[in-house]
Structure formats: C-alpha cells, structure tokens
Length: 409
View 1: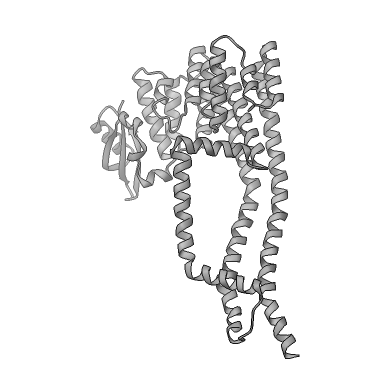
View 2: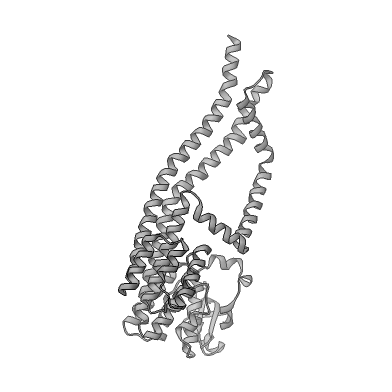
C-alpha cells in the first residue's frame, strides 16, 4: 500500500503535516477528510527514496536524524508487541502511529509497505543503512531465520541502550574539562587582546628599557589584536584540511588510527574502548545466531580503528581455514592477553558468548575508571596552566611598574 506525505489544515485552520498510507491518492484524501483534516499538498513517498544518497539530503535533514535512543525505543516496542503475540504487520502499523520522529515515522511506513508486499523484515530494513546498520540487519536476519525475532530485538535494544549509556557516561566525564578549557581560552584571549594593550599603553610614555617578558607580552598582544582574524581563518582552514585528510583518504585514516592507539594517556583508553566494543558486539551477534564469519565481517566495521579492523579481518581468514579465533588475535599484538585468554577459554568450553560479555564488562569498567582518573588529573593541570598564564601576564605588567618605583626613589 503506497505511503503519502501530506500538508493539511484542520477544522480550526491549524497547519498539519504527516504521512498516511492508502491505496491511492484519492483514497488518501478521503481518509484525511474523514478525520476533519483538509489536505493542501499530498505527495506519494516512493520506495526508491530508501537509497537516497547524502548528496540529495537537504540542510533540514541534518535536524531530522534518527538517534540511537529512538531506534532503541522503537526496537524494544516492536519486541514487546511481537512477544505479546501480535503479527509483524500490525506491530509495525502500531509503531508508525506512535512514532514521533518524522524521519523514523516515514521510514517505518515505507517498511510497512514493503512487508505488506511480501518482503521480509530483514530485506525491508536493509534499504535504510543510515538508520539500521549491517549489525542490526544481520541480527534481525538471524532472528527471522530462527523464529526468535522478538528475543533478538530485545537483545538489540539492550545492546543499543548499553552503548548509549556508556557514551553518555564518557561525555559527562569529559564535559567539565572541555568547558574549563573553552572558558580559560576565552579569558586568556580577552586579557591578551583587550586588557593588556590598555595597561601597557602607559609604558610608551616612559622611554625606558622594558623587561624582556614585558616586550614579549606586548608583541604577542599586538599580534593577536591585529591579526586575530588571520589566526582564526588559519585554524578553520587547518581544521578542514586535517579533517579531509584524516576522514577522506585511506592513508590519513590509517595514520590517525595509529596515533589514537599510541598517544600518551589517551591511547590505552581508545584501545580499551575498541576491545570492549568488539567483545560486546561479537557476543551479541553470536548469541543471536549469526555465524562467526559473518559476525566478524560486521564487527571489524564497528571497532572504529583500522589497525584493529585489519587484525580482525586476518583472524577471520584464519577461522575460515579452520583455526581458532584467539590465536590470530593474540599474534596481532592488538588484543590484550587477558582478553585473548578469556576467548580461548570460551572456545574450549563452548561458552564463547558469555566470555565475550565478561571481556566487554571488564574493559568498559576500566574505561570508566580511567576516564575518571584522567578527568581528575586534567582539572588541576588546566587550573595550573591557567594560573601560570595569568601569572605571566601579571608579572610582565608589574615588573616595569616596580622599576618605575625604584627610579623615583
């Protein structure tokens, strides 16, 4: 059944917009009028839109993204409806009517249309990779094949909520240091470009030799005041250039991922997060019935590091030849010994999924504790740096004043 987007007026003249499914545009108009809604514009939403590329997206689409939280809520609601014995098509229909996000609502309506035409849920959601990544699609495929779709959807919702909670805790831990850095940088820039020139202007009338640090401060202040816009444009250009190099070129992406793992303090944190993500995702896929080789091909794309992804790809080739998983991962040197040993125990005892979950729990706990430690270290360091910068400015201004007092005496 086709899906139509409409813009309409209600009986009070209020503007409305939404989607509706009907057999034809005439039927859609009739359905709207029966609910006291008078369509002004009615357009069919083609199923071809599922393959739209980023070049076709408007600026408004940036504000209509479907977040992980919304997908998690939708997934859990669908699992609940299916678990209660409701068939798939009525379950999706119920989700369409209660979904708030316009983009997700439209997507669900199109999925409903495809399922109504006889397509599987897996095939239908695979047309929307921006909302349902390969990890999601393969788990749904495994659930449909095993007849446990509601259980798999519950696991998917749990997984998404776990990832969302971890990201939230990390963002919350880093928010305060980042806020301090922004405020501190703004204060120093204001002092250097506005306050210092007004105070140091009196030194022009002294006709005496100024201390070296005072001359340096005046030079920096004059440069910033005159050329701040050049610095600003340079920083923007550098940001755009580096972002292009590190995100659009394969060499740049590989180099950046290598730096991420080796940078002091933050490198081990990135490493632990990648291992935790690998273990959690692989465990969830295997528990849902996804074959190991398929699961590995999915997991290598979610670890967010090309060095670790290459190690997983090489391990996948070894597994395809009949070897175990833990040995090639150990040889790569990118997986901690404790994680490899626990995987080896899981392979030998047939409890691979449980061991992967334990690895993920351990490393996620380490990530949180390390972030707490880093933030507790960053705060005094940033305060110290701010204090030294302000102290340098104060001393640079006071030294000539002290010299003036000595000359007067």
